[in-house]
Amino acid sequence: MQANHELVKGARDFARSHGRLYINGAQTDSLLEETLDTIDPSSGDVWATVHAGGVADIDRAVQAAHSCFERDWGRRPPADRERFLRRFLDLLEKNTDLLAALDSIDNGVVLSMLRTQGAGLLLSTVEYFSGWPTKIAGQAFAPTLLPSVPGRTATLSTIFEPIGVVGCILPWNAPAAFSLTKAIPALAAGCTVVVKPAEQTPVSALAIAELLTEAGLPAGAFNVVNGMGDVAGAALVNHPLVRKISFTGSTDVGRIISQAGGRSFKRLTLELGGKSAFIVMDDADIDTAAAVAHMAGYFLNGQFCMCPSRLFVERRVRDRFVATMSAMAQSMRVGPSYQEGVTMGPLISALDQQRVHGIVSDVAAAGGTVVYGGAPTEGPGFGFQPTLVDVADHGLPFCQEEIFGPVMGVTAFDRDEMDGLVKMVNNVRYGLAASIWTSDLKTAHSLIPTLQVGVVSINDHATVDAMYPFGGVKDSGIGREFGCDGFESFFEKKSVSVCY
Image (cartoon, rainbow, N blue to C red; front, top):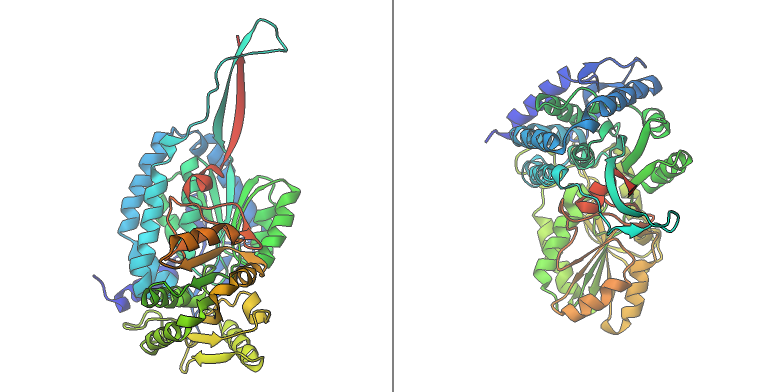
C-alpha cells in the first residue's frame, strides 16, 4: 500500500496535467478563457488551477452528450452497457487511491478515511448499478376489450426509455462519490451526462472522465465542465436539451434550480440540506450510541447533510453519553487531511471556519454551554475543533439551521415528554434523516411514523447503501437517489396499446 505522501505527489502531478474541460471524450480549452484556482484547505494555498467554462462550453458539452445519446449510447443494447460498467468497475478499483488523494487535497477530508470508507462507497455504487441495465422491464396487462372499437381486443404494456441528457451538479464535500452516484445510474439507464463540479473541488471529476474513456465509454457520454454555479451551472439547468438535473447542495441553490428547471419541465432530483436528529433512549447501548454520534458528527469534518447536529438524549443517561463523547473527542487529532495520524481535517474555507466559529459563539452567548471544542485550531489551513454544545432552548438558530461543520448540540428530554420530543425533532424546515437508539423496538416503531424525514435508522445513523433509496422531505429536497427509485428516475415510461 502506498504511503499518503506518495499518493499526494501523484495527485498533484495529475492536477498539473489535467486542468482543462473534458468534452466529447477529450480535454479541451475553455472558450471563456478564464480559470479557477482551487485551494488546499489544509494549507490555505492554491494547489491546482482549472479552466472555467461558460455558456458556450456548456452548450458544446450538452450537444456532444445529445449527439452521443441519439447515435450511440441511448441505442446500445442493455448488455453492452452492463459489460462496460463491469470493465469500468475493474479499472476504478485500481484507481480509488488516486481519487481519494485528489479529493483529500481539494476538500480537506481525511485521506485514510477516503481510502477505506470512501473507496467502498464508490465501488459498491458502480457494482450495484452495473447489474441494472439488463433488468429494465415494463409491465404487460391482460388483453382487454376496447369499448371504442366494438369486437376488438388490445394488449396494453409499458416500456422504459432513457430520458436523454442529464445534468449533474455536484457538491464539494464528496466530489468523487457524487460524480459516480449521479452519473453511473444515468449511464446504466442509457442516458448521457454533463457534470458541473463544485468550483471548490473541480479535479476528481476530470480523473473519472479519463477512467470512463479508458474503460470504453463513447465520446460525449460523460462530459465535465468546471465553472461558477451562476454561469456554468445556470447554463446547464437552462439548456433545452438537458432533460433532467440531479443536484446536491444547499437548499437555497436547490430552490433556484427548481424554479429554473420547472420552466422547461425538467425532471429534478434535489438532495439538499439537513438538520438530522439523533434520539437516545435510556435503554439504548449508550457507549455504542455515543461512538456512532461521534463518528457521524465528525465524518467529513461535520460537512455532510446527515450530520447528527441535534442530539436528543434522555435525561437519565445524558451525563454518561456526554462524558463518553468528551473522552473520544480528547483523542482526536485535527490537522492536514493527508498527514498520517490525523483523524479530522479542516473546513473547506477560511470563510467557513469563521462562520462556524460565529455560530458557536452566538449560541454560547444565548445560553448554550460549550462542553468541549468551540474554536479554530492553530496552524495553517482552516481547522476547527470537534465541538459539542449543551443547549436547552431548541428555538435558537443553532438548533434550526444547518451548521455544516464539526459541531453538535445536545438537548436532554424526559420519557414522559415524548410528544414534546417529536415536536422538537419536526420543528425545523429540513426533513432528511433521524435515528432512534433503543433496545425497545416497540418504542422505535411507534416513533417512526411521527418523524417528518425521508430516512430513519434504528440503532444506526446515516445508513447509505446503493440498493437503498435516499432522500428527504420538506426543505431537504425532492426525489430519491440510489435503489430502484433512483434508477427509474432516469427513464420516461411509455404506455403502448396494440389493437387486433
